[in-house]
Image 1 (cartoon, rainbow, N blue to C red):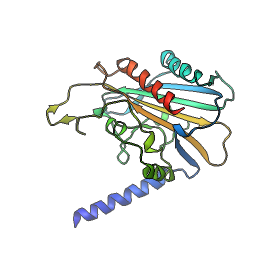
Image 2 (cartoon, rainbow, N blue to C red):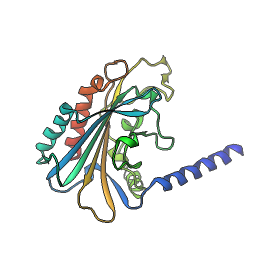
Image 3 (spheres, helix red, strand yellow):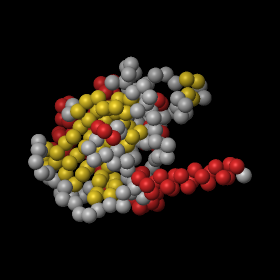
Image 4 (tube, one colour):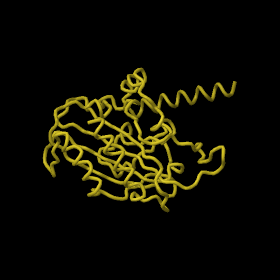
Length: 239
């Protein structure tokens, strides 16, 4: 009986929290749903790491090498980068590298949130990475996609990854014992079209990398090559 009561309380809490953070004037779409003609855009690229408590923290902005992969990939599709002024859309690229077994995830959706203070116009429904076990294993489900859109969340079908599925349990251990130290990367791309109406549309895409060669503290350079590959793959497939 106590278990049933506890489950009912948790279900009510999830419903309440979900309603509280959803903006009725915000429609979150899969990056692949952006179907406007190619045009110009502005770019914001930021890199992150994990602190001692497993929270994401901003470590760099405007990485020229990573930004170059974005601009070259989009140039091949007819998009032109603008250094300032009005553009067809603004593109945000957020990249994190860390030991994801230590990541501090949201309780309800298991997402790793970006630090709100590092992102102008921060949106709970948009600005998070998925953990490896979700990013690598969820397949497109039309019914779930429709439900996610009604709830103002990105389509689960967009949560693609080029990573292998994680074998570690949530505690960081497996049936064989403690997992070795490892670094992994996550990619978040957010597209904000200009000149929108009363309901704002935001397009989001996510990916995860394979394990990277371990380096203490998991700096971005530990996963740089894997992040480049995941980022280019996401842009090529979804835009």
